[in-house]
Length: 294
Image (tube, rainbow, N blue to C red; front, side, top):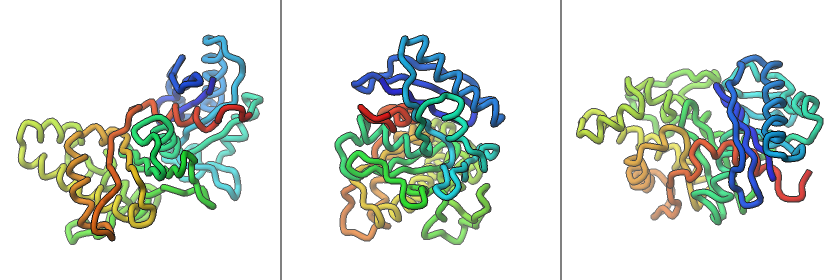
């Protein structure tokens, strides 16, 4: 079996996967929002789910906000800012007395969907989370590509491309200006649209012209952002996750708008919805350990 933990902003979820990738046990607890308490909560949850399932202590895979700096080993870029600057990985290893691997939650999402989800079998996969924030992960031949600085796929903190005159730059929580997160995440959509994406979807389905126009603009902004990634990476499949990914009308709209922005005469990449939903984070964390590794 494999053990994964998804360390979210409000909850911590643990799951055990069998050899076929099926979840055989799972449990969630609230995230205490305090560093020391959070380390203890992850350790306690991991031990409890193993004990309840009759499993031995297993190597732990962790999906987390932000990433670990290859330079210092400390957490950086987490929107749960109280994690930043902390030796989260080393403290978890000490608390559990076992091997632990930790990766950005968007990387784990991408790994899950590329392993046995919506992009299974694809050579190059770009996994995208459009939720409270905006993240991404790159998978090539089934392997997670984090890059030399461990920032591979972090497209949410690149600026909105081909900005229009009415797309006035706005400062992101990271300190940079006009990050994609401010324009295409669920939080970003609410900022500029004045309503949540789910509400806009309901109104659009009822024929509301304003909501239809807002979702069309969202699709255009997502397409512009994805076009830059396509020009660099040229993925076979782009998988969307997070709350915004549940808006079905976005998929044909984004797919159709890409050709106006990519440096190509056709678009081979398919933009698809995730298979595993909010389980992808914890599943991808578990997949950080492959059979026979420890």
